[in-house]
Image (cartoon, rainbow, N blue to C red; front, side, top):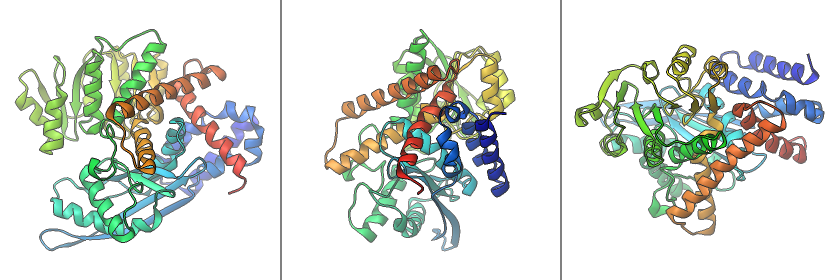
Length: 448
């Protein structure tokens, strides 16, 4: 066993000993560490400085209670979290997630992923994540407002335009960001750079809503182009029906592909003629309904309960855009059986490690989340730039910058893949490309 490999194993052992029940955090970290051996072999000074042990431990992990009152007069208490993971290359940056599944394990895994994702954008932002186990679904606007105001009462003391800039994530859209920003402003005065994903009337950026979905397709297009292929006439299966999925459907359609599925928690719709993203937008963004309503409005569509990844049909590209660990090993084997050549991730860590291994065993080209879904945080950082300048850029300007960033992310991943002779392992390439920038910054700044 090489010195680098034994060092990686020692770091993994320490994580398992310290956080034995944080399985999703372990999965995220171990998946990265296992790809870094060639970098550590080339840079023994990283081993000497125990750099990995510093990288996998958050600089700060904050947990707090969030009391709020529902419309019926009942009092409730949820847990709030913010994990400020790494600030080596810039202020902390990462979304807030409101979902019953949120706990410290989930927030740490998301925050760790955010370090390398943010590094890949080429923009000066560090990694963080936060949220609460509060579920906004089924809540009135007044209940969501009261929760957000209570949440921000505590969070505001830990964030700021040059310290930590949260954004949205699952369960946190324009409504929630507006309530959070209003609460922060009342306590601290108007600082429009403290949150991103804001409304256009108070410092938001055009193209932010579309960014992750559009960015996913820009990355996928770059991958296919490098491999001598094109999106035109490809059949695509997409999971999810939120912002990422909706705008991925739109951009895929513009590229000449046919998206045949989308889904939500209850089930999925299949339309061989192609999903109409405008109908999805109406149902999910305007009416806040369930995706089964799509089949009631579009004659060629079918609705089925269960996971879209259990649906057996021939197609070319899989774009998981729902949530973490949504694709199991068995489902990955079905993906391979159905003739899929490419998997690019719009959600955070949607494929379990055995699924990723199955892609590799079946020669499926794989674009990991930290690279393929970086469009959202990239445009969040561009929103920060606009806030600093007190200017608003056009949609075309932001979209062109996003396209360039996503092309660059694939190119950096591909360059690292070639540098270390990884044989088109774009997951390892992305991990290494993101890590090298953060590692260099951490070494330059000393033992902090």
